[in-house]
Structure formats: C-alpha cells, structure tokens
Amino acid sequence: MRVLFVHGAFVRDGAWWWQPTADVLERHGLRSSAAVLPSCEREPRGDLHDDVAAVRALLDASDEPTLLVGHSYGGVVLSEAGDHPAVHRLVYVASFLPDAGQALADFGPGEPPPWQLSHGDGTASVREELVRPLFAQDFDDATYAAAVDRLAPQNEVVFGQPVTNPAWHAVPSTYVVCGEDRATPPDKQREQAARATDVVELPVAHHPFVTRPELVAEVLLQTTT
Image (tube, rainbow, N blue to C red; front, side):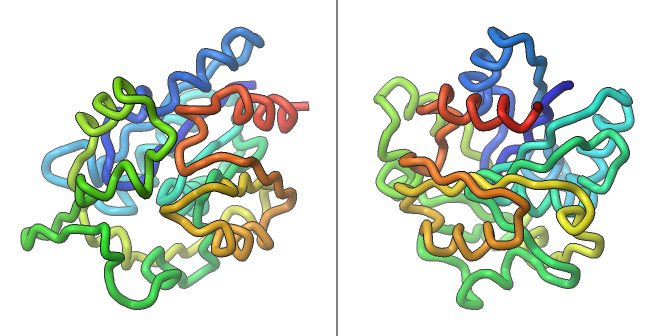
C-alpha cells in the first residue's frame, strides 16, 4: 500500500505541506508521495484536466494499491482522477466532492470569496493578510513563514471546470471533517461528507496534516486495513 497526496489550491510544493504526516506514516512502514499540480506549480498554468492527468500519471506508474488523499480543491482532482485500478480508497480532507456536472464554483455563492484576490491575468491567489486568521490559525511562526513562502497563484479556470466522472460513486471514500476550520466552514464540510462512504470529524483547523499529523496519519492507517 502507498499513499498519494494531492494538495489544495493557491499553494505549491505539495510535498512540504504533507511532510509532517508523511513522516508519521513512514514510521509505520507506509510510503507516500505528493503530486505536482500544473494549475499552480508550472508555467504556463494548466487547468483541472492537467491536474487530473498529473495525478493519473503517478497512479499509472505503479499497480500498488494506493490511498489517494486530497485537501480542499484537491478533492475535486481526486473525484475526477480517482476512478483508477490502483486506487484502494479516496480520502477527502476539508474537501469538495462534486457530482457529475458540478464544479468547485458551484459550492459557493456565485462570486469569489473575500479572501481570494484575482490578478486580472487569469490567475488568483489568497490575500496574504487573511491566510493566518482563516487558514493557519494554529501554525507556529516558523511554520507560518514557510507556508507563506509556498503560496502560489492558481489558474482561475479550474474553479469553473466540472467533474465528469466522480470516482466516489464507485470507489470507497473517507471524509475528514476539520471541526475548527475557519476557511471551509465545518457545516459545509459535513454536507460534502454525506456523499462519502465513511466520515471522521477531528478538532482541527484547515491544515491538520501540517499541525496535527498524528491525527491525520491515524485516520489514514485505519483506512489501509
């Protein structure tokens, strides 16, 4: 069994975000890696289809059973990429579970959230002054500084691109509700979680794999049995 992590929007260097949890998993003998999403980590910026292709290429590289784990926007990528023979289970962390024909933008009020800054060139990013209060209230100063250094513009087109073949219809799934999340309200997460096979709620903020890796690793280890 291996674990493949898919990060959320507006960041780069997925391996850094998941490393605390990867370290815990490694101590339990479970290997992991993190995808690189072209929509926010390459030039020119890719779209949702490119992100899905990047994840599927990693899945194609091995027939080892894979736990596919996604955070926030990463849940949209999972939903489109996860219908793959190598995928053992999907794990959504504070994520979105779109059905066929739904895009990420369909889960909002129809306009960008106040923390999102559009640059007028087809990309957007998070307003830095809102990162800590909404996304990283539990980060220590050193971790927060490293996280801010890894913020990245995202191709805005991904938020309007619909999923066509939601994998969670056919593949078992676990949803991790982050009960102290200020960025994605827990009530909204619970609505999404109703589509998953299993639901776990943790008393954590938006990035528990950074700040509470032992809790996230425990959930993942339980899903491998």
